[in-house]
Image (cartoon, rainbow, N blue to C red):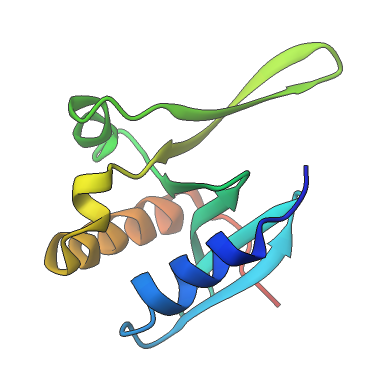
Length: 115
């Protein structure tokens, strides 16, 4: 996968730049997006994915969001990250709420922090 730095910059600086504690790290041919060191989003192939769990996944499904899926060793692997609906991207107040929910999902999953 090739990194799309222009889309990454839009997400991290333009879309989320007003939120203190937002950082990113290059990973998996894309980027991980973090809030205070906790990963909550992936930017891959020009798509923004947010972390989901049993609590918030249905919100994404209502918008028709889809999970991040890739192939490894000939098998499909589905991660618990769903595409962020455009309507949420366009609403700063809702975006902040969905970021909080994604951070909560990540904390519950006990994923590693960015170094």
